[in-house]
Image (spheres, helix red, strand yellow):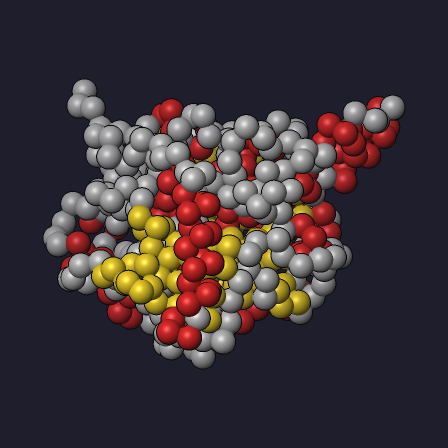
Length: 468
């Protein structure tokens, strides 16, 4: 496999040799189920198993104890829409127009979305007979042609964009710090139909869990893919009655505790239905914490900065992989990996072909998850909008541009670039550029080679919504 992430399809070569219906059925049964649980604005330091001193996450802690913690796992971007596009397609958002320097994400007045030409995880797995469902926040386009049901999902239940949008009262910060459900006229949808508006966010985490469990029970007799994308801990924060005022961490902790409970519901259902040993579950987040919301935002732990930035705290995520009988318990994987790697991983495990005529930015993690090899990723690109601000190769991370996000000030250009060894210095405190001119030269060559592969798609985030 070359380093752009092209994959050799194994499905045709394996299944083409099947000679009987019984053998075909056996091959079908061996295909694993996949569950991706995606938090929103969760920080690297926000889970008990990643070191938070007062947040209780017993179900995620058990998941980590029974599976693997990935300690150098990155989102594809540092804000919602491009990050989710990267996860769904295995491609950097710069390639398909799902980023912009003018608008960070899609809004209710946006007319664009994930292009139909993009191959999503759901569409890929559906071609191999998988049942597919998206539960939760989508944020890849709210018009019918961009919804999950137009991108390979059989079923959709959730909100089409962020839970702080369609605000009807007050300034944004005030409404998010002291929220009421009626302040945010966000629609709750089932497939293409709006079934509740405003969505009752005080019960939405619990209802997402119920929908996820119901799908697993419906789909258990065939391979399935469940994408459970929580709306929170993105502000505004809401917790249901059973979880309100239960955490030492305050309302943010209440929200995380309820998300943790929902993870427990999913894992318990997989165990009860006899599906655990044939299901790979990955828990991670779309980007780092929204630090400007202070106690209503999360923590990056020892990492620098948060959401929106290309410092480590903006894109390195607390990640857990669980697959009883396949992933060895109490494993800590320090190999670099990314949400960009999820599509090729699922493709390899499901025996699906990925088109070779398109550049992909992911590598399969199958071997490293199984404990049969090292991770294949050695390079990570850090984009903010269309601007490549930083690159990591091996232990070295070079910043061409930096900005502390969501505060006043301009993007700062660095010449010479900043250089950090993020394995020895994950907090990015000690610039060692002066001692490593050779590393900087190598990383600049890496950037030039990468940029030669990039054909920018027209920005989907800048398309206005046409008025009726």
